[in-house]
Length: 348
Image 1: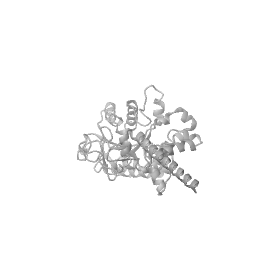
Image 2: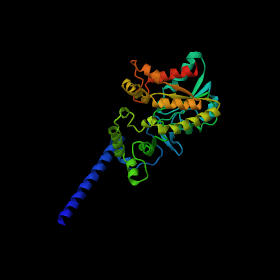
Image 3: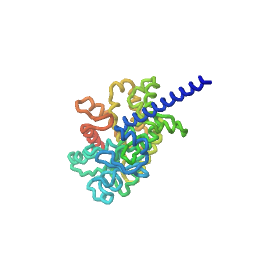
Image 4: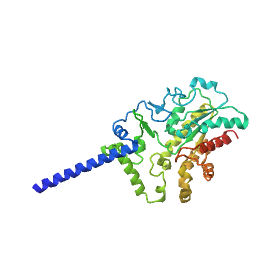
């Protein structure tokens, strides 16, 4: 009996140490992800959306439908929550209106959206006004919602900039202290689904997400899992067939909306830097270009114009000037390439 009690006590001690180790690992992971001890601590409690200012030069505020929008009180941001003139001023815009909607790739202040009017003017003296309603972190779902608020706009064309992390409903959520966190939907890509206590706890846990990434890397024995997007919850959905039916519904709805305005929709497909890797292309080119192939099918079925820039980027990537400043966002050279290709398509 005495031996059994000692064994039970030791078991409790080991369990307590194990729990402390898990809690310590959870907090250490949160500190690493949030970038500070205070940020890691706040992330344990701050899940409610609210007024935020976590993006440089683009403060955000919560929106009940969109999740968040650019703060209308910020310089250059209109009442609808994106950079541009107020809706009552759209009728005064001179020249054809080219409307661009996307995420942080198209949002760059000196990016392809701002370059296009000058290139058009140089080519033929035509006046073009670009209305850029892109917002960092938005998905195709959010882009459809923000377009639905643009009553009264009459663009000649709408350019939908597709990003490889668009195959979510919401990819990010915003907390009151300005922290941008992955949504539970994005976390479920790496973690077990379900409504049980364990599943919910795992989706709350930053440590579980990191463990999920490690499991994906180790579990996959085929070559495809060695691709850099395979264990990234933001990008990996674009390479999963089950994510594309919803994406087609969103794009089809955007097309119907644009047609009701009397405009033409173009789907602009910019690759990520990893897709230009010769080693990956030699290993399985068809798999690397799976998202582009899915978009080709959607656009063909829906009768939508498509601007696929993979070959253009692949060709230019052989040159000395880098096209990307990370795996997703473009350098000035990358933006110039996109602007030139838009010019060739929209104003041949």
